[in-house]
Amino acid sequence: MIRKFVAFSVSLALTTSPALADTLLDNIDGVTLDATGGIDHFSGLVIGDDGRIKLVLHRSDKKPKTSFRIDGKGRFVMPGLIDSHSHVMSVGIAAMTLDLSTTHSLTEALAAIGTYAKAHPDRPWILGRGWNQELWPEKRFPTAAELDAVVGDRPVWLERVDGHAGWANSRAMALAGVAATTKDPSGGRLERLAGGKPSGVFVDNAQELVAKAVPAPRPEDLDYAFSLAQQIFLSYGVTATADMGTSIQEWQAFRRAGDTGALKIRIMSYGGGIENMALIGGPGPSPWLYEDKLRLNGVKLYMDGALGSRGASLKLPYTDAPTVRGLRITSDTQLRNLMSRAALDHFQIAVHAIGDEANASLLSAIEELAPTYGGDRRWRIEHAQIVDPADIARFGRNGIIASMQPVHQTSDRLMAEARLGPNRLSGAYAWHSILAAGGKLAFGSDAPVELPDPFAGLAAAISRVGPDGQPLGGWQPQERVSREVALAAYTSWGAYAGFADGRFGRLVVGERADFLFVDRDVMLASPADVAATKVLQVFVAGRLMWDSAKDKRPGQ
Image 1 (cartoon, rainbow, N blue to C red):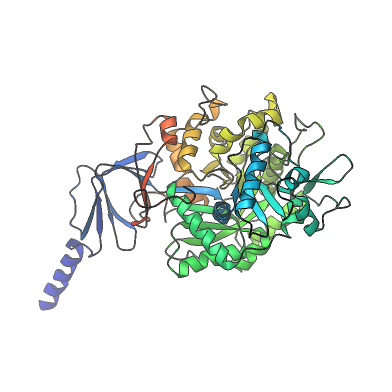
Image 2 (cartoon, rainbow, N blue to C red):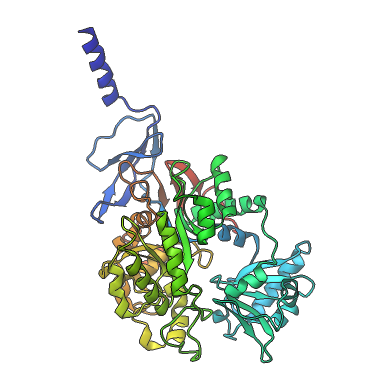
């Protein structure tokens, strides 16, 4: 009898007494996606000491007793957002170097470069990124001679906004050994002057000719860059991201942050090529580390270049360059070999494809390999920007995930029209059509190509209208998606795309309590108001990681 009474008492205590460290997040206007993709409105969360959600409360539910309580003061709460395609370390390095993204002419860019060089006389190289000739009245690539006129005493290397071209001065080219006799590498192109001399712009794989001469960042540089990147992502409400193209050095920086308790965001990593994949993962994808903060999922490969530098591989020539069809960075045979190598060890495969020819060839490769490599593969096509309408149905086969960036559509609209002409736009940034065909979506930013701002992405996804309010009614408006779809593509579908479903992405029992306080209901606000959303506070695993009242975004 005594044993039975003791057992009953212990059982009763376990079922009625709250865990000592449970926290009640109360008095909130919360939303998340339910199991069917609909919106669940809730008024509170109970969060355990492990950072997981123990209870989701609705208005009529009785509030449990907990040791701690956070009063949400009626504010809007939503899941932490997932950026499904970014370059994490590049975001931090961009914050440490020259930013040309706000320049709107060659003259402006050169003035900014000259000013930056004078302000940093101790730097042996002038490094930066963000220039975009499509925003300049000149609408042409710049030259080394123009760069020499403002910085001639030191080497200069500046990446184009999309990372698919670089601009060097003569000093940098000399240090790299680039001369008139230098040949175009496979998958790359040197822009040349009339006599054949390199002009100073290097496209796609040709960038390595100069980049190899740039001193590599030290481990402490990477650690600092990563700390900046984390603050930037958090300030925009991004609590998790897929890092596309992780190097072994960058992975080690992530691990150092994890080992010292400085890893704040969640990273789903994709090694930059087979070598980095194998160095990081060894025999296969890594386990989840640091309480679901870090995992090597697979590998990032490339089919082609980018539309802005006319490196995207097209089925027909560029409308504004009739002799050019783009660049294939990886041949069909090479691609299948690389994909097979990764698939053999169950690494997830994510492949960059922008042009319609590149997308068609990648779809063919997946269709050929999928029967051999069965199981849950979650093949990813990164960008899928320009797709022949005849190929869209193929996204519905083999569980393909189109990892797309809504802000690319609004940023690239005029350039895409010039590159493609009016007859090839129906398959451009075709989110709705890919989804309707049975494909899966995951949304991101491609930061630092674009700002890692998911609210700008949400606004673009539901409107197809840019921040300038153009075009009225939206560009190719039939490709808009619903708010529910857009939110899913930035949360639960992003988690699925990175093999994190069930771990984070929704505010439901058992998942990590990653959530945001924001200043408006994004499910009701106009697209323009959605884009203007202010992030107030960011919590990861129930812990406050960013507070707009105290923290500043790097660069502000």
